[in-house]
Length: 141
Figure 1 (cartoon, rainbow, N blue to C red):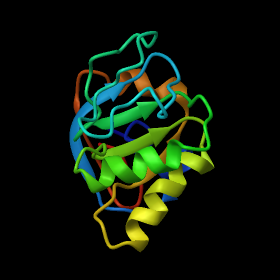
Figure 2 (cartoon, helix red, strand yellow):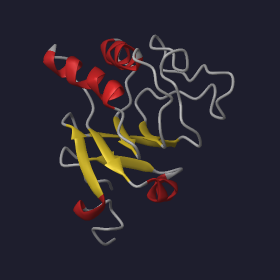
Figure 3 (cartoon, one colour):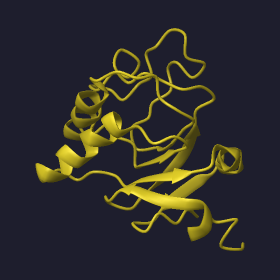
């Protein structure tokens, strides 16, 4: 695979430094609200309107096409991290500073937190159904 096919440096960037992560890809088909949409105690998507309701984000490489804003998203991400239910890595099309703040605070508290990277949404589907590794430099394989 070429660097571009692997999420090469030209098409990805690290948004928040964190631990490398690997796991099954969960490519969301729609944006999600973490506040009320994800249960931090389980990592399950609980939003009744979300197409992937019932799927768990815990330990998965989570591909987010976008988020539905809430100033509480950072606290949900922080709680997911504290409870051990955070994604193994976050791959976002549109960075969400509020959501990413939860990862920054988790790191400041000394909790293991996943790396978050930006990648064009057009590349998400090629990872669906695969086990994915996201390196600390944002490289996807």
